[in-house]
Amino acid sequence: MADSNMVDIYQELPQAKGQRLKFSTTSPFVPAFVTSSVTQASDPAEIYASRIHGRKILLENPVRESRTKKEREEKRKRRIADKEKKKLGVIGRREAKERGVWKLDERQAKFDLFLPLHHLWMGYMSELLGLPQPASKVPTIKDIPSSSGMHPKLVKADFHGSIMTVRRSKCASLIGLSGIVIHESENALRIITRENKVRLIPKQNSIFAFAVPVYSTLPPTHTSDSPFPVPTAEQAKTTVLDSPYIEFELYGNQFRFRSADRAGRKFKPKETIELL
Image (cartoon, rainbow, N blue to C red):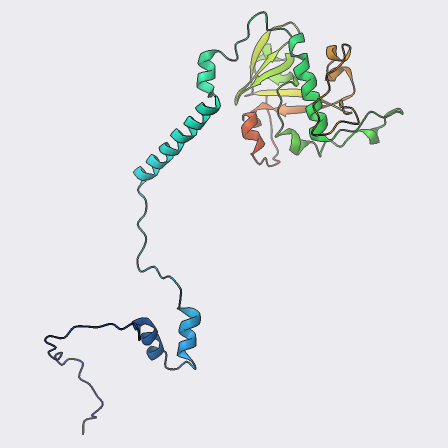
């Protein structure tokens, strides 16, 4: 005898002429379907409320943006950034080169004219590295600040105004050149020598040396909010090499970045072999 509860799934669907499928808000489909399907759970309504209600489910993969659209968006952002720069009066490297911003007149190419910039850099180093005030007694090795703590700050520092000396280079004519850095680009340093000559030195395949004062050149009462003091007539003629200093070597091949780019760059300590 056939079971009366069995249903033939292959039988034809009954005719439903003139009838429409209706959905009622009193019994939504999803909660009713979940509660009717989860029969083994202790409380199907609680499962729906905690796991399904209020959650968004993606039924298909979202449409990816095309490469052309991304390029258009990037160009639009660049145009907006360029307009903002023009409003602020900021010029780019190409425009600065066309205008000859970094070309010095012979009357301006004087070493003494850039000594105030060098003194400003020494004050900047004193504040950046937290250099101690000059000791009243005879200085010892313990009084000299640790150079290992200076390295992370120096790689991100600005070197405009520092005195750079070429120690080694593949170009023999560059060895021994020394002067105040008046412009630093990604691949070169422009310095003015004591002979009032402007020289452009490539960073690639060159090793530089620069000095940092051992003691602070700022007065003890100086704070970060106060301006740097104006040096006296005697101090204005001196450089960092005329007082106790610490000398560092700078490998140009690993330092080919602009000063603005170095400020936000993370440098990792790596061993290097420079065969010059």
